[in-house]
Length: 228
Length: 368
Image (tube, rainbow over all chains, first blue to last red; front, side, top):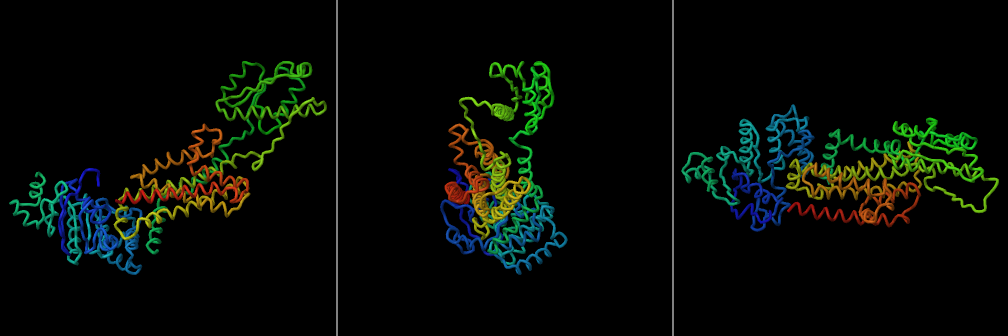
């Protein structure tokens, strides 16, 4: 796929409904590549996977309707207002005009953005943008949402608020698949997998992983594994 | 369809909120056409010349009068000696010096010929050439008038008639070229930039993950530019009609259809460029170097293809702009119908199909 280099090699895992699944790994471990395969913008050379019950080869269209995605790169349109962004993304997911209107009103209210809903997204601070992007990824009520390093470059307070949003979504039954390299965030996950050189080296709840490696924090678990 | 409308609406927000691109989009055609129409011209008009008359007799007077009466030249100064020529050229205002030899009239009568030296400032070769041609032409006319009474045994007179552009206005040549250039630039460069911008910002990924189909994304991205390019084409045609009084001999409808075809060709090129470039900057560079330069240099817009070296002539065939210029020159100036330009139209159609096919293939590869 990337020449002879195998970015992701034989990974096996299952994620339960409503679970917050942390997908960890050092930079270049193959997290993003794995996510891209799961959401259908890259194709694995072999293997199979189902997402929300749909096969990633055969039912790509069904998968697209049922997943949300937020990438490393911040991905709303800076030159559109908050409301226009919501309307646009609602539109491409085929939501009805009425539904979009309801959704954007509640969303703006929940995020406390009433005053800036007519401002261009480009004028808002990064933390706010990330929260809007997350809400937009959830707009069409996906069964599973993929978050690729959603909190990169965000201050600790906003990170905390962001995780509250993640909890809330999980509580409502959405499965969360999140990559991060903040190890404190790993502690928040129901289960985590740690990827080293394209392979999953560990997969369990944070608590069990810590006792397995006999260490105090996920940070140490990670260091143990990454050093090999 | 609703998705598509939403998408196009978003594209228009992008375009109308970016004041700089908007200015380029609509200001450029107007600026270009005015620039090419007024400032850049192959014609000469009131060129300053100097006269060095060594004989000062009746014949030289008549010739000088004839020259200054034409609107091509205006006599800037009369000089008296050879050594004055160099300094006035160096000053730059005077572009040519006409030097009449001594005893001009006398020689003409006794020896049947006498000489005028035309010295031109060839730092600008085109103008120098044109000046010497015009001087020659004026002299020929003068001679013909003089010889009316006693005709010589043989005489070959070339009766030239310039059809389709009798006044040889260069704006007639530039309008088709500028229109081609603008349509190419707006359609290809703007679309390739706008598609690569989504890639650069990461929004393309989000779109590809969503249920909207890749081809809907591409069509949605190019659709606004079809519309804007048509507005540009209309602006250019109106400007040339009303400001430069350029007649459009052929069918406006056909002109419109052919323009739409060329717009689609350029859009396909724009999409192709966007599939091979990762950043907006690359897309812009490829559009400028890969599209603009050939349009200006090899399409016959400014430099005639027939006077190019053979390899260049062959290369010029693969440039869509060449064919479009032939088509619109035909329609605008000669008033021809489709029966005369079907071949060029067919070539454009084939090229367009090829580019669209290629970009669909490339686009798919990129998604793997």
